Amino acid sequence: MDIGRKRRAQIILDALAKVIPRPQSELNFSGEYELIVAVILSAQCTDARVNLVAPSLFKIWPTFAALSWAAPEDVASIIASISYPNNKARHLVGMARKVMSDHDGRLPRSQAGLMKLPGVGRKTAQVVSSVAFDDQDALPVDTHVFRVANRTGLVRQADTPLKVERGLKRVIPRGMWGLAHHLLILHGRYTCTARNPDCRECVVADVCTYYEAVQRLPKPIAGLDPAKGAYYCATRRYYFDEPASRTDRAGIVQLSCPKCDSMNVYVSKTGRTSKVVRDYRIDKPSRKTSKDAQ
Image (cartoon, rainbow, N blue to C red; front, side, top):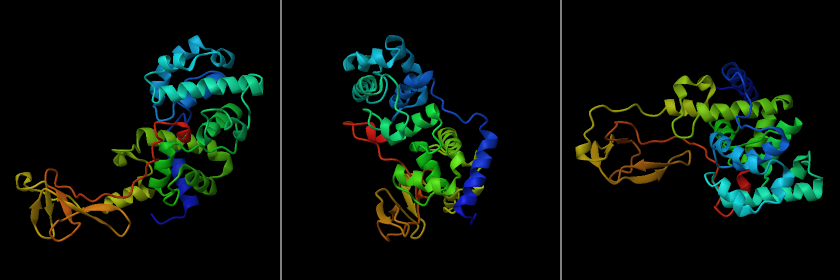
């Protein structure tokens, strides 16, 4: 559907609000201490896993003061099943110590102040300031928001979380930024998933640029014989096992026929085209640090 981004945003958010009755964080927490700990733990990890692990941490270290006296290795042993446990343990203890030493045991209320805490990047600061302090300027972009915003065409092929955030803020009214964050996260978590998006059940498919591109892909070919080769070139009517590759006009690397260089290639086992449409992922942080993802 050829519509402007502001109109697209209105349609998408209205549709999602009708099918997501409780657009809120799925992390379990009570108070600002548990919130910031849970959000730090959630970087590159599922909320479900955090909800399983965090209660044990809160039982041992129930406050900023208690956590500030913890040994990072002890914290790491409690959160061992969380991604990047050693780094996150150091961040948590460092964060608690700075809150105690510089802020009298209370979180700073500004995003800038939060981002000075160990382990707190832009996304974590925005989540905490939005949820804990009702910060109307926050529109946190996690991997789900990043993917959904790009796929649906809410932003124009934005390749960093900051670009996505700025793009969304241009097309979504300021008073809806917090709501939009939760709607896009939940839609990405349960419907517009990374590997197998459920486009048939998606309530915004009619205005989704990703779905439109998928619909334009060549239809499957029936009756291909995998015994003759893993791939089939429909241009040369030729089977082969080792494909070449080409970059198409959209800048996407596609499989191609090793004989004629055609991208009209199908997977013999499924009969489906090998062509892919542009998709979007936030690059994972290195194991040296997880703060950039936060």
